[in-house]
Amino acid sequence: MAKKQSQLTVDDRVFVGRVEEQKQFRAALAETLNPPAGENLPYVFLLYGDGGIGKTTLAKRFRDIALQEAPFKDKVQMLWIDWEDERKKFPELQVGREQIQAEDVFDVIRAAAVRNRWGRQFVAYTKALKQTAEAKQQVAEMLTTGDKSDELALVHHLS
Image (cartoon, rainbow, N blue to C red; front, top):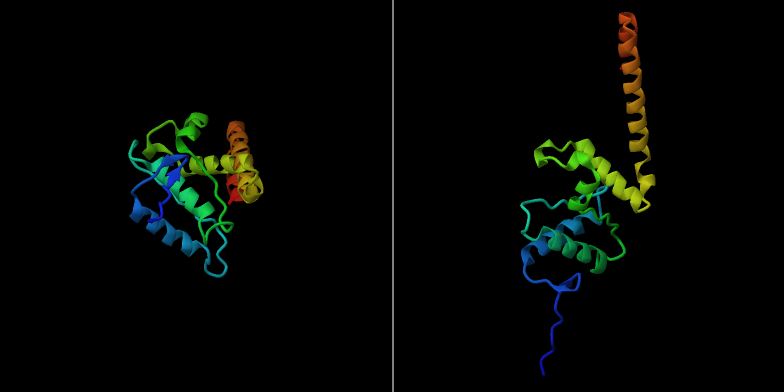
């Protein structure tokens, strides 16, 4: 008697196809398990493309591979970001893809990380944002005083 194969599901829905994409994802993910010495930055897998072609379902399948299959299970941390959900929260993202700034993308990633209690991973970035805001404030104050010598001193101070 033949064994009945279990169906592959994603969010309780049958998942078929995309065999090559899954194979490529497993290969790419396997490379992240043993990064080169001294490399400690996170790896980011980004899926993008036209709407309605199954990116979200494929991304969820990738999530399941990373979190449930050997050799990845218990070795991978995942921060799930649904771009469509984030667009509703961030007005900066409610523009064409070409107009989205890298800083805005990083802000979305940081916000999602904070929501998942990973905020400590962004201490240096948060510090840099604060320093940038303070520098902008100093520049604005100097420019409104009208003293040209102060502008030159500020440029030297900030460089």
